[in-house]
Length: 367
Ligand code: AMP
Image (spheres, rainbow, N blue to C red):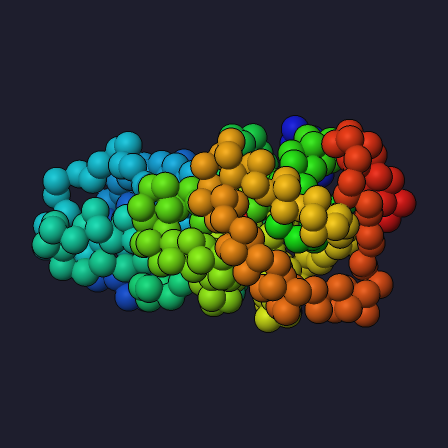
């Protein structure tokens, strides 16, 4: 099945979905059949679940809806906006949220906040689908229909860019076609420049950890403040911070056709964490491609870039030297790591930009 340019494979049949809906309805009925709970569906995704749920819930109840919209930029904090607010009659009542899917839990936080000053008697969370492996665990999930793996799904109310909500079954994104690349090389090797061309050519999502850090520094976020002192000196930001940020960036793009990792991994711990993380999503690195160039060429490129971009870590020979030392000590051993996996490829990074792109494309097309 295709939606836009993405292919999806059948995952849950109508019967399996119906069984999961019934499971939630019966469990809630067990606890609430003697009262009159208010069910609050979360639009748009939950509309189909709420309708079928109510057909199975054969006791007195009320129903209402809320609508939230999440906007996510480059940072790891999604901003959630309320588009349709709560009814006024929730005070002193048992409120049960009906969600179509709970994954990381970012929207849930906003929902809980919506009810925080409403003096409800009880507040419970029910979801049809539950991605327990990625849920942040902040609130108890009181009822769920089906635990599912961390894969992108559509159908039965859930969409891919607004398409697919009317499907009776649930489909999973087919990830066999994915290409995930690591661009490897010293600062100034041209990873960012080449990523711009490759992402267009192969329809990939480009994640540059350096860019995400700079975006956060420019916006003075907590992450930006934390990273600043390391970046200013030309040191690496601690692994735990960088690994978490990288995971968030991947999680924000569940329907991507593949990723270009630029500036990540930079340490063996990061490479190992990346493998574990990708495996948990049924993904893997297809190739690590190194852009090779001599230190003298790199230093003059960085100093030139420093004049144009204003990046302070590119303007000072000592900081550049420190970044090279960090690379030699911590990042260079990754060549062996990826060679052991049979994934390491080397490309000459000196010459006209478009010729280097062709060299990279040749490696990718031979994969
Ligand atoms: P870049 O733009 O890739 O040269 O990165 C700029 C700076 O951001 C680096 O010198 C590090 O301080 C920090 N940084 C970027 N990526 C990583 C990473 N994978 N691990 C640790 N620090 C990083």
